Image (cartoon, rainbow over all chains, first blue to last red; front, side, top):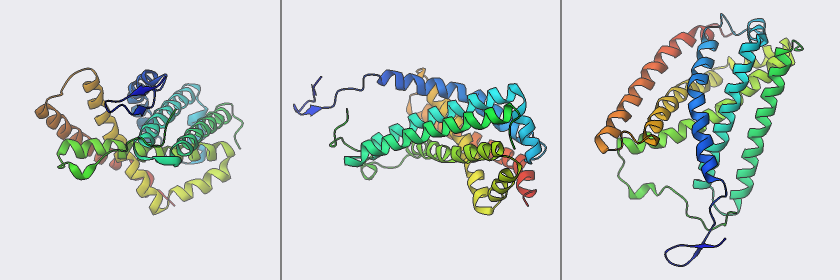
Amino acid sequence: MNSRNATGAAIDPPHPDATGHWRNQRLTAIALVPLGLWFLMALLSLPDLGYATVSSWIARPSQAVLLLLFAWCALLHSAQGVQVVVEDYVGGRLHIPTARILKVAHLAAALAVAYAIWILASGRAG
Amino acid sequence: MLSHNRPLSPHLQVYRLALTTVLSGLHRITGLALSAGSLLLVAWLVAAARGPEAYATTLRYYSSIPVQLVLAGALIAFWYHLFNGLRHMAWDAGFGFDRAAARRSGMAVAVLAAVASIFTLALAWRFFAAAP
């Protein structure tokens, strides 16, 4: 597919799933309103941030599930937002490597969070 | 997929700054700040999973003044991005496009974010104050 702009110069074809990007960014945004408020309120209502308090908080199944949902929605939303910023501001030959590195970093963060929550929720921590 | 001669944005110098412009830029800046801040959340959870000693070390690091300032900044960014995100959802649904409405909703976002930030910073203060 080779599109041309008004001056006849070739421009990039549209991304095959740009609508999907737009839609997912909004779906995660909507989910993050209650999830983000829940996370902040849950954190602020802990008596302290010591190991015993925090690990027993995450060991509760409902809290572990909500925390994983919050972290994954936040990281997906972040990956998509960062991608748009890279598309706008990082040009030239740095564009693709920057976009890839940031995508992989988000994926690694999502896996690390899932692993950490699994360890804490299954009582294997420490 | 992507060529190397795409136009970059924005060309800030050709515009006169308006309230809505600044607020729009802030949405991106707070979004990026929250992306960076999410690394602190990831590191915090990983430290907890590694056990009490690793967690205590991380918590000590998080109790230092520079990290506490970053966390306070992340909290302010959280509220701004959340309220302005709701404003974006209203726009996506087709509401509030005219100039006066956009200015008014922008002011509302700024005030709500400031009030919520002050309130939650006060609630979080005991964590900050309890820092070793």
